[in-house]
Image 1 (cartoon, rainbow, N blue to C red):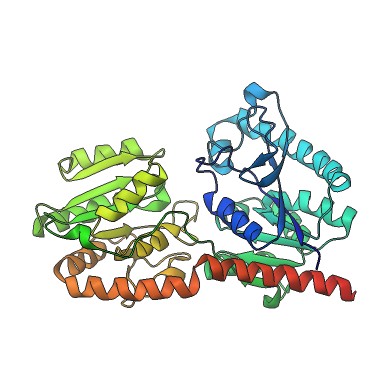
Image 2 (image 1 turned 90 degrees about the vertical axis):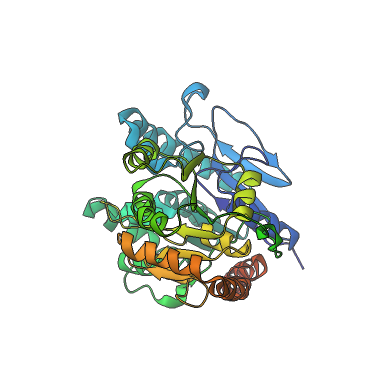
Length: 407
């Protein structure tokens, strides 16, 4: 039996083994390699990087600008980068032109059985070039943020990309929420061409919980980008009520972002600096340690002013894997991960009192925390384990190649 060859198209890809760019994509590919699939990544360069391989994964990096200004991707997500000024918006033009031309060259240079595009807005264009020139099946994967970004653009862009997406053979999405958003754009496509395939965690979870013995106080944890839609300002407001009941409670905020200063000022305003600690961006190892030392994980995501929200909540899966009970808001794709009262607690968004009450409930009830953790372990093993994820992807690839052979 011949080895199935797949090209993955992505905005960015890790530059070294410890690079935290799309770690779940890195992990997915490594696990597919172990399943005897051959993967080549088609992605952009960064500051002239000519790297062709990392950890056994073949990479084709296309250049789009002089090395000293080739910074549209990697360090900051592109949607955030283009908000930083007109020069970054202008970088999109050479990026798309170079990607277009390189996809033509790549199609003649490489051989493959499947094209798998991640973040189809705008990379569906590169994928369609390969599909047309090589006559191979095209899979598009939406991870949430890009489809919300597309939804906020003028109608002509939504119509254009909606038309282009109809040429894809199959779609994967990370949650039910993302699936519904996608179906709004590609109407009359058929649900049988869309499958929910989330991604797993890239941290090393643990089963034992003996680290909590003889521990003073309760430690809450938030991890994520410090941006509006993460709702950390709501969490800080709810913390005021929590501290009234438990004066020695501590909140750790792990992450960085444009809202950091605003959030620090909010803590100072309410005299919470002794109880709330900002840890900044953490390495994988340091984040693992924070999970291990925490009693409750909180994800207070909201819909921001542009309608953007959490499309899955991988940090919730990570917390569950580390045996930490979770409290989260009932928005976006979070209900795919958290089943209220079974493996965590859900509360309405932008409601500091409801969030505080749920946290207080868990602090007071150790038995409930243990029950939620037990159920969470079972749930994520069934829905979010890497074995389940990779097997589903292989099923999709196999069915598409067989369908092409029949034609």
